[in-house]
Image (cartoon, rainbow, N blue to C red; front, side, top):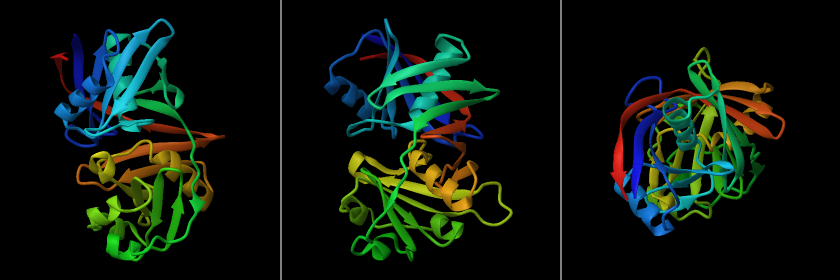
Length: 262
């Protein structure tokens, strides 16, 4: 089967920043093993696969190693592809394993409507200070994530974690976060590591902000915030609590498109 293919930079302020994602528009669903091989071949943190069914657009996401239930930057990338390249419109809704996921145009940006996943307080895992090589002030969890709060943005920026130690923790992903520096262009910062899923460090992680947004909205006392992910590529997200949902806005910059044989 031939598939239309795009690679774009999501949550990017310029080309070669943000988080690159592949988007494959398919005529029908191939076997899961084929999609996994394609994602491994693409070798990006996520490849989004799209099929236009009678009920609308359906989306699935694969890392180079596994399928995941939710991905923010690849959904933003897929929304950009559909709304700008395939079926120009102001809004669409992806059907997914995590329910319906609306994507809406807002000027030059796109806005994701994702489920909020507030974290809960947790016991410090053994050796977490050693694994992160930084003092950890607070630990919270969700079903899938460990959230570690550090003292400062600089502590998050200069973090060099023990990846084997992260892979050995009970949760498959670790988020590290701190309040932004006074006078900076954002409210909080973060980084995201998921070596067990084939993602050593994710450059910009939309789905992580389903957890980070309710945490920082409550901590800072405001619903609308600006977040910056301090990976080497870096990226900025504008987020807002809306009841039990999180709006996550960002811009997408195209890089390459063509046709793939899968």
